[in-house]
Image (cartoon, rainbow, N blue to C red; front, top):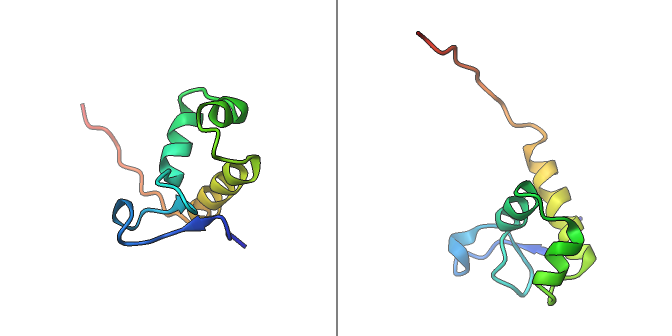
Length: 76
């Protein structure tokens, strides 16, 4: 399902990364969240493929799918 994503304790402390790189899924998300398009990411990191970026985004979405969010009310 996520053949391009790997978690190795020896690489970035086990964070999910694009296989064969030290580029984490988290880093891809940060780039996209800061306004970078997929094409921007691919231009900046030419060793990544379109499928790498797509799978990183799907991986993040999948693992946040069942995230439990606990809201807190701000007190004045």
